[in-house]
Image 1 (cartoon, one colour):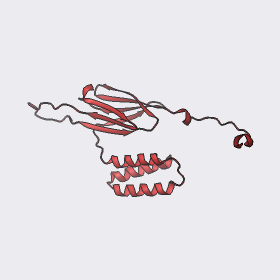
Image 2 (cartoon, helix red, strand yellow):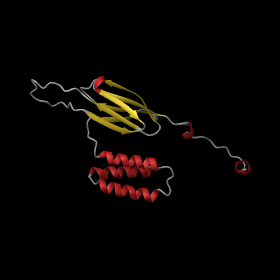
Image 3 (cartoon, one colour):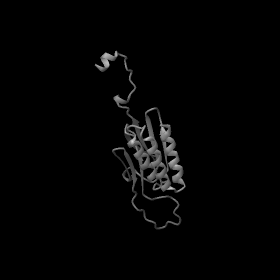
Image 4 (cartoon, one colour):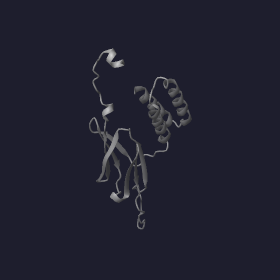
Length: 170
């Protein structure tokens, strides 16, 4: 897991320098080096690759926070001042969370200066397999999306009792 975090940070740093081709080359090289020892991590590396490739396409609008409320509770907060319930769409498809904001065009008559952002937006997040979106709320210009990490029974720690070799292997 630490190696994956290191690779991800390296990719983001390189993307920030607009060296996307180099990122993919390094990413492919790291994957080739560790893949003989990493069983079942294909999807993890595919997700990291997708994140690295989409990083350069994202804008900073609207600004957002991700909060860890507890061991298994998370909240995404987006600043969406000027948008109301009818203007915001929150959708989950598989592991993809997409938030869209579409405001109707306002009349510009009498407007002497426009300093407030009124543009539409689309913000995407990739969720882990065990993350479930519980709901969304809009309050005072902030959109809150509550999520919970649900750990399935087969992934929870369990105690393995020792038995004889004969019972185990037959």
